[in-house]
Image 1 (cartoon, one colour):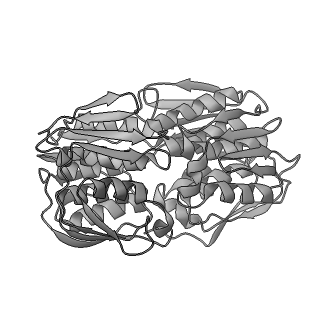
Image 2 (spheres, helix red, strand yellow):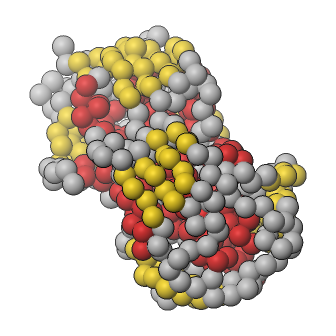
Image 3 (cartoon, helix red, strand yellow):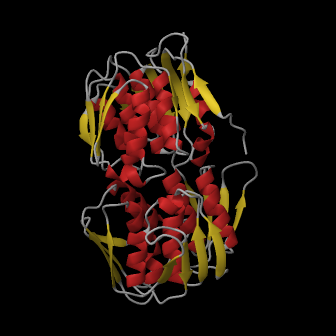
Length: 439
């Protein structure tokens, strides 16, 4: 584990310029790990993300009897699949604050059956999981809450989860549907399964990632738009042999925004127009704000064309990357409005309130609604100590407040508890420093 200071002071940066090789995608990494564990055959995973969240998943799989080997000092792993079973039928699993780990794993454990306790850090016990548990219990699983109803920790017992039809709400987190889709071949061993989405489905691009990866592991899902998903009986996860993890598109947003704000060009490598991640659409928002964007299959580059334009847009499809737009709005020519972002409230922290609080410290005029944020930039950014709420994206977003000489000379932006970036991007501040030019 690397050492982080209690706080990090960022000096004013005049220009951002350079190339960043992205770490692997968290969403893809944890999905692939679980699918590889459940597949027939051995899967070679290339460029797995090194982070707290993937460590949580790897540790949990190891406790469940799944064999995996890291290839030397690289981020390449070999996972021996269990063909839809798990060798260990009783385990206590600590899932940290990793939603991409606890939710799909809960569904898989409920479908396979056993005696498992699943828990995490205090914030995880405040993040909802009730819609997923309700869907599983209604289908024959046996999951009890051992704390507050609707939230982890959970106790999973052996049930009989073999329905033909399941329903799940889609308006709180797309991870609930992802969890059911990833467990669906385990549920549909003997008869076909239809998963119906109740209400609006948010964060649809993350479901696209799930469906794409299921197909890579041999599972075909028939869609009825976004309303229902049909899984034929008797499908089994099959290892693709070798699979590469794309660079993280959400992490790309900070560097791409830096190029748009502070000159550029800034190029990220590891994600591009061929990406399966919806967060690459973040660049569409930068283009609306006036930035110049160019893309290849595996890279994206941005540069500034002048002062950013204010934006008014719906960000339901890219909620994580939308946080970067909220900070980029500090550099816009007027008031920006980010709409349809209620899901921010059930992330690693209540991101709507946290973003509003910290943006105000920098001098911005903020209006916080139940599902929107309105940002009016100050004439001059104020030096501030930014609290990060143990939320990696808060720390990374607010590094952008040091850009473009917007701070007065001799002042800084202080990032408290920078260690939180270890959740997805342990070397973030090193990478940010490499594109920073102060004169």
